[in-house]
Length: 314
Ligand SMILES: C[S@@+](CC[C@H](N)C(=O)[O-])C[C@H]1O[C@@H](n2cnc3c(N)ncnc32)[C@H](O)[C@@H]1O
Image (cartoon, rainbow, N blue to C red; front, top):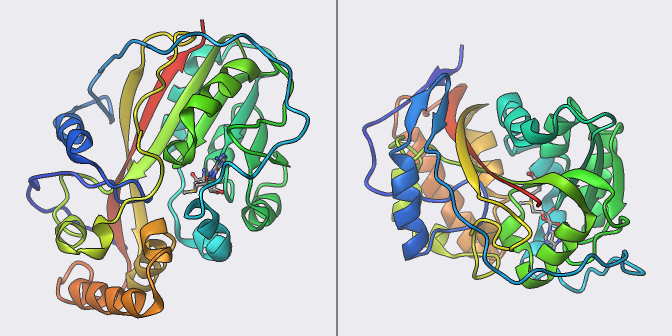
């Protein structure tokens, strides 16, 4: 039986399951989210935010999706695509259901998973809809096609979505929002979404209330290096979208020492480090996990948390 561990509340949240490290403002917001209350099996803070940027007219699909908009750091994921598929967490069914709830009663629901990677979120939304999974990285798409064959996989980017206008009921995006060039990606998302469709931005993080892992990652200088665009995880801000709703879901992740090390090995800040730094980081993490009875050996359960931001296209 894997052991679950939970320490005392920690002073600040870190964005742990991907590469987005919170900037100061993001950390304040994250702390506020960390105070969310548990309701009916999930965490809810009910925060809402209004859209802001000028509207962009609906345009036809670009002639070809371009990978030129993918940052050099974001291209590193493909170098560890198999490890990513094996060791990164998936997403709770309840999170996918809540993301799609506004369009759940539509016939022939069509969902676009943008920045789909190896198909972690694709798998979760496939239970509810037909899915087109788009990612610029060929190696990630190889994993996705092998692991989630029922999805339609396509090469493309958020800034050049290879789908016609008004062709999807929902756009979901797991651990990828911070890699998008939003001034170019948001008009594309608006273009492919049908009126009344939903945009859901989804992410996995270490549970901010869990001391283990967080105390290590917060103290470790290497993990403080950020990746992605400056906007970080800013909610969708575009006048085509209504208020942003936010909900959090527990996402317990069974793991062990080797898998935890392998999971962190797929974070962009570690991929971008030189081999010496990566080796030293692994030794520090191994020593840290060995130093705690909950994680010293065998299986344990990391209490990750999935956050979903959703907004309706007007
Ligand atoms: C951290 S992975 C997330 C993969 C998957 N969605 C998940 O939840 O595990 C980030 C993914 O975003 C993709 N990506 C990076 N820049 C992108 C862009 N501009 N447009 C679309 N996808 C992008 C990468 O290729 C990578 O597969």
